Image (cartoon, rainbow, N blue to C red):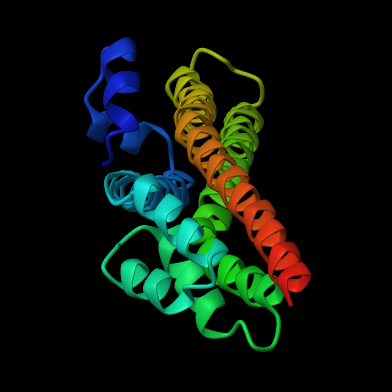
Length: 220
């Protein structure tokens, strides 16, 4: 069982294991999806925190200042000492400036954003799939309910246990799917916002590089 089950079990007055058993066979894929979502969320949050702690905007400014006076080697030396992802991009761009500084920076940016997007498609799939799996559990649970009615010839009293179990299976599966989707949606949007922030910072540095290239060309 996963952390997604705990608040739901508390609200419904059952243990996580009771919920798992009551939800029927569809709970297995739901649990797998929840494990995937939790794994991606934890890994991406650690990545985001690590990247935030490694930011050194003052180093970026110094690198750009050195680039303005055509001291690219000095800028590269500064960047190699930094763990800032933009510093890495600038080091790559300055090392490949002979071809095109702008294009080299764009290639470096693409590589860095691959790191930012890792795991996000998986998390997006989990958030989308969870309520659908819950809906599937609802359908199978109701099928069990109607099946119980059919086998008893409509004698509801004799099939009360099976009917209750089918309805419970339907509701538990639906609730679990919604919980996973709702809880996973918040970190998903937060992580996307951090990627957007990084994209804006990269765009600002790219604009500064364009100004530097223009000045260098004028100087030549």
